[in-house]
Amino acid sequence: MCRIFNVKIPELSNPSVCMRDPHRVQEILQSMVKAGSNTVQVISDFDMTLTRFAYNGKRCPTCHNILDNSKLISNDCKEELKKLLNTYYPIEIDSSRSIEDKLPLMVEWWTKAHEILVQQEIRKDLLAIVVRESDAMLREGYQLLFDHLYEHSIPLLIFSAGIGDILEEVIRQAGVFHPNVKVFSNYMDFDETGVLRAFKGELIHIYNKREGALLNTGHFQELRTRPNVLLLGDSLGDLTMIGFLNDKVEERKQSYLDSYDIVLVKDETLEVPNALLLYLTGNK
Ligand SMILES: Nc1ccn([C@@H]2O[C@H](COP(=O)(O)O)[C@@H](O)[C@H]2O)c(=O)n1
Image (tube, rainbow, N blue to C red; front, side, top):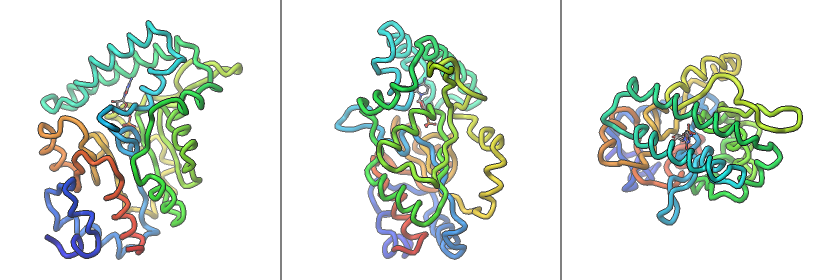
């Protein structure tokens, strides 16, 4: 095993850590340290990456699920949303189907779900309450991740195919929505009385985050001086640095190893990303 892992970042020897090419990971990390933490930015997915996949054997909710399961949704619509989840989530995580095959089905899922949510005339002022009453949980170690990035002026870009208004509320209630955090996601469009009427802009689903990034080129100009990206994701649409492999582990492990530099299998914590961050900022 590479020296850097044993001595500087012992967390990389955790049983949850899998790497196709540890030497390459070592080289990347060393070159990032050499370039300095002022060249680094973190880009992360949200649901099941910054939030937990499960707690005490029970699945934790995504941004969509927080709303789907809330008192803001009628029982009939809850049933419909559940049927959609049971139909499309198995497709999302099916490693035997190609991205090209899955993409139109994912668009169909998001579109149908958003149509149902809009029918519910959800009130903006109730979002904070449903987030507070939900089982949403950020991964263990989130405080260190968010605070350390803020203290070192490292930008954190969250790219999420979830719902931006809910996502922001989760991190606001956790006390970590610092000014260095920027969110790209699906945002709700409320009318002047604060009732949901539509979703704003282009739909963001799990396979078009790259296009979302390109649409925000203005913001990305600022980040051109930070070419070293620590990227955290949980799907093959979130490529390519550290991937959390949460579900259908054995079936999907090889494709994750082929695509991500580091794969964390059934690891509900941010221990490894935090260890890398401390190493990159010279705190280790
Ligand atoms: N109606 C829906 C649509 C999607 N999801 C899940 O949300 C996740 C997307 O959010 P990221 O922050 O991971 O980009 C995705 O993995 C879907 O499983 C949902 O729960 N309901």
